[in-house]
Image 1 (cartoon, helix red, strand yellow):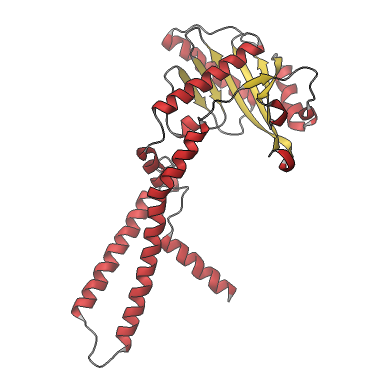
Image 2 (cartoon, rainbow, N blue to C red):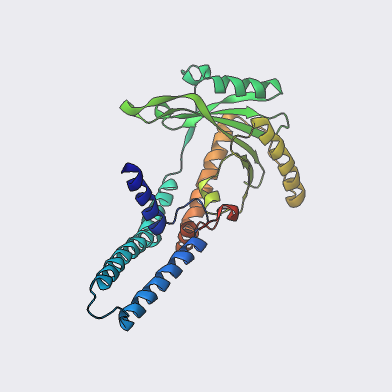
Amino acid sequence: MKVKKDSLACLWRWMVDVPFGRPRLTPLLWRWGAVIAITATLFVVFLLDPFEKGSIWPKVLFAISAVYYWFIAYEFFRLENGRLYALYNQRRAWYDGQFQTPPRFAAIAPAAPRPWLDDPAVRKFTAEVLEVGFAHAGDCAAVPIDSAVMVARTFLAPDGVTYLVLSFAYAAGSGATRSCCWPAALGIDCYTFNYANGSFHTLDYETVLMNLKRTVPTMRTLALPRGSHPLDLFRAHTKAIEQWERETGVVPLPHERLDVFIAHLERIRLQEREFYRAHPYSRRDHRRWYLQLDVPRSSESK
């Protein structure tokens, strides 16, 4: 009985719910086409009334099938209407919240406790970058530092202009719900700045603006797959900034103190915030998300 119920539930979900994580335009068109075809068929059958006179059971079965179909169609319309219209305000509010207050960062004092130093991921990657000539400039975190869940270990690259930032998420939650993450999750960033307040940023994750297909004019961004090794990401960054220099004629800024680097980061976040405010989450963005147009078509299916 349970297997039968699960099968019916899966069938019901397939009929009324077009999943995300793959392009949705073709599956939606198929379902809309099915709705139109079945509606037209029911309407024609109703008008022609082909059932034999005096026989009520065919009419009863037809009526039950029609009601069941309209219930399925109603669920389909309800789900898709909510995703296309009602979810817009929720998603707009979420994106707006990401840029409501630009984060501030501060250096962690040398004498401050560093519980993450015992983490195997921190030890491993710190040792690997130091071994090839990077210099540890210091650690910083979002303000207030006492409640931070991530530390950004900043290293000066041998090229004299690049900052390699290894961000370790070593905790989650806050207050009574705060817990440790073991081993810490790693995020990697490489930054190079120039004298025109521009920057080149290579990373192994997707930022909010990248998700929205937005690019701040003074910034260049290169995204590598998640899980890339810090040294592989640095090498890709080095090649990219060489091309950046040739194309634009920019002169990279040499390494500066950690507090100056933090000021550069805060300036970048402020630029991103102002750029988003000028180009916020729009109906067009929502339609792209609704149809999953940016998902590779190789995953498309009905």
